[in-house]
Length: 281
Image (cartoon, rainbow, N blue to C red):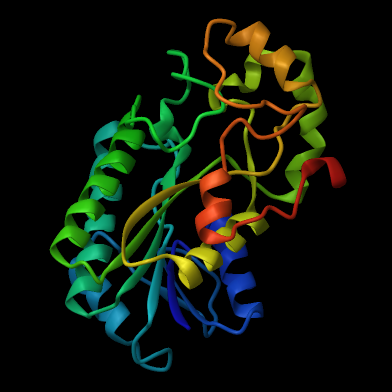
């Protein structure tokens, strides 16, 4: 496919651009920053004119795309003021979705976030493992935008049933270089309770995106995307008993299995994590 990746210079984006390219796709990185290359074009995604122009075609780069992977955003709460986070992220996503509709680009995969599940779980989750079945619980402006983006996608595909928009609720993205720190997490179960001790290897994040590009049906759907295990060596039963003793359990916890359920992504998209910090730390 010919794929535009917004935010392709970011932590997840760099890996996505590389892996999609290695798998034979023609990838174009649209971002504010990046190294000069045949795959990179500087685009301000808050400017609709730039967005629709860049997706329609760019001299010496491409003459249109088949699909969009939208990753660009202020990537976490607190990195900018709340108002700046809302204005940047919401407007960029609207511009990408609207431009895709105008240009008849039928396939969009984009980065939602685990934060819509209620992170940092200062209010405990309704059950463990968590999944996509309970309503969004945004606890920050960043998370609120992710929830509103999902709501916007639902309405867009209602009006255009052949449009496919897939929201991937990525867990905390990690590169192999990050894994050296993981053994220190065991000293305090609460230090990583904020996302139920979850993470996602960037390479598996790229795999999830490719599976969604290949397998997502028309319409809207959302998927939690996490590694198959937690960041902890301590067993899940011990962690949950210590930190969330009153939260109902729904299904087996496993010893170190992810508590951010990826069952739906496995079943619907064919996603299967291949990387674990335990193999590389």
